[in-house]
Image (cartoon, rainbow, N blue to C red):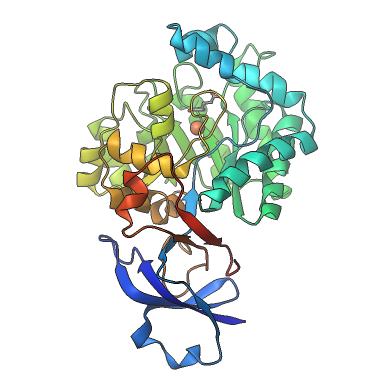
Length: 396
Ligand code: DI6
Ligand code: FE
């Protein structure tokens, strides 16, 4: 059925720059697709017979794409918040058996239904701020059964009315029972074919860090992904420079994420490969990091910049993509337009998706109606949610 959404102020993000603002705009949709977007006065003839929907001057943006989350897990890590306030570092806590490993124990003890129920509560919070596409990683199971259970729970989040993309992050940390990292990497690679056959994997991710896995170990995981035709992405250069970005770019990675310690050579590699840089200000803030990702140099090199919540129980326990818009600007010096592109069109690109993130013909009919005058307000304010309505797949 065709719908004509009229009297909106469209933030189309058409083109590579600018908001693409259309005052007195309209959107023509059919089912879950946009057929046309533009000024109401230029409405094409095929709008005849479409059911009219009045937008009352709302500001319309593409639906938000949260391209990096660890939304499915068991347990609670707020004790680590207190430990860090007393001076412990993330690495100190990890070495003492806390951190990722503590979430692994709680996740292994949870059923798929329990994992789904807690993740659904979190997903509803993201939805309430306009998220229509969500990426979810595994990586808190670190054994074949629990990794698969996490990914199944993640896939079930689609029943809440959002598009879910899953990444296999078996190479997140060494599980407590393993003593040989290379042997563990072999088991990670061995899990992939069955997970892919079950339709649980859209991309393969890894954590390249001195307290996680080396570039050589990550390369083995990426080789296994490549053999199955799966795209890769990487947690890179978060706490130190392991040259993970360069490695990932060599595999044509969709994205590299975090990047506080990225160097000039890594930036050139990303630019050459067309890999998206995903910035995660929630983790930067929560860990009270001081070293900034090289945003100016990334921008100058023409690397697409995305922004995401990185929701996880340890380093980024936020469920607010709107707060990430603000932090992306205040902490990382993105412009409000770059920040919004980062949570829409470039977030989509970080997932290998070209069919969303803009208001244009052929795109998915996922969009948000906001009670603001100008799109920069979405980034300028924080702790406030001006979402009036969220449209997913053409439906309110
Ligand atoms: N980097 C992160 O920010 C999360 N994972 C990763 O590789 C943190 C995961 C955690 O601490 O639970
Ligand atoms: Fe992460």
